[in-house]
Length: 290
Image (tube, rainbow, N blue to C red; front, side, top):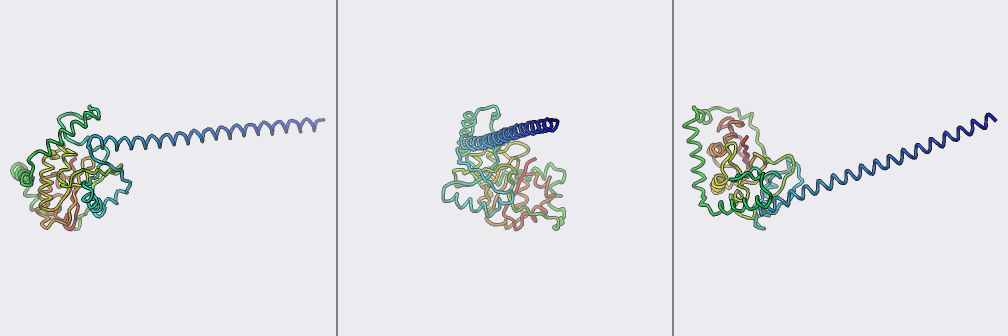
């Protein structure tokens, strides 16, 4: 009799354990399904957010935009050449931008307080104004050399140091890639063939000593006619230009680059000779305004 009772108790214990396992497996299945549903929802939300970013940029700028999925080091001069070749055939100038590029543009109002319709209107007004302005290469050159004269006059011999200080060419590092964000990169197809006109669609600047949009336009036109240089990337506080071939006179180009962006020497290459060596043999010019 005792053995029968023990056997019955053992069977009951096994039944209880089996039921507990079933419940555990059920809970795990539910948790797995919840996780999959959550991950799917997050992915759908991410896709929706990215799509809304593209839609917003296209709406307010009037430019077709395409999200790129390349690694940072893949945005090379050769890759940009291929984009520019396509653009010449299809009637656009390619510019690599980050999703926040509109908020680095210069307007007479704080666009962060505007809705997308108001932003679109402000950008259209600014674009018409810039495209109708009498901006030429001579005014771009005049702007650069006026900035150099200011440095000579007001900088306590800083210009002389930049002009004459020696440089250790073993320290030169040449960035072959363009400055693009480490996050999202968007190809903006600006519907113009003259690269200096991209600033009318992206009126960037007027903060941290960064030139005004019309100054960007004028300098870009001067550099295009002088060096064949074209602005091809705008990422946060950074701008990149590409040239068909390196500048024939890198020291002269270095002085002009400094006039366009003081930080390139004051926070980077230290003097004109240093910068000239950095761009010698290089087809990309990179700038930043911190």
